[in-house]
Length: 154
View (spheres, rainbow, N blue to C red):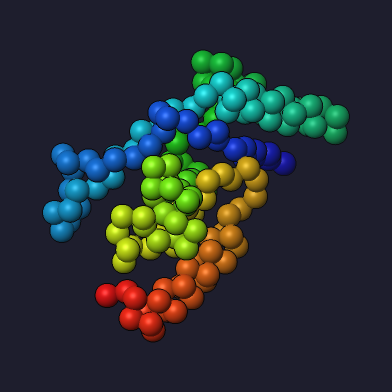
């Protein structure tokens, strides 16, 4: 039996992305560079998960197959970018000062740019985000179709 935990990362000013002017894709377009920093909240959350998993195993009469990870390893938290449910890079919101996209997943600054993935999420506390991504992408595509049919998108 194996356990795997997931928890919410609290947004912080040290986690963001920017254009990496030193690296380009195969078409010569600069790519994104990600900056990532965890807070004590995430480390404590992972420690709690590890302790809970070991407690469950003990209560079931089992024995953990590995030692409890310690603080030197951030209690075994996976490195950023390893788990496929990373999200929140292009957050949606009402103001271009605090978000990249509006409520329709349309960029505040580039009207023909829409993001239909997990980037617009402002938080992900639990569960797989796939169904929410699909629902949001459907809503965004309907918005695009309505605006295009009215000639509002060039």
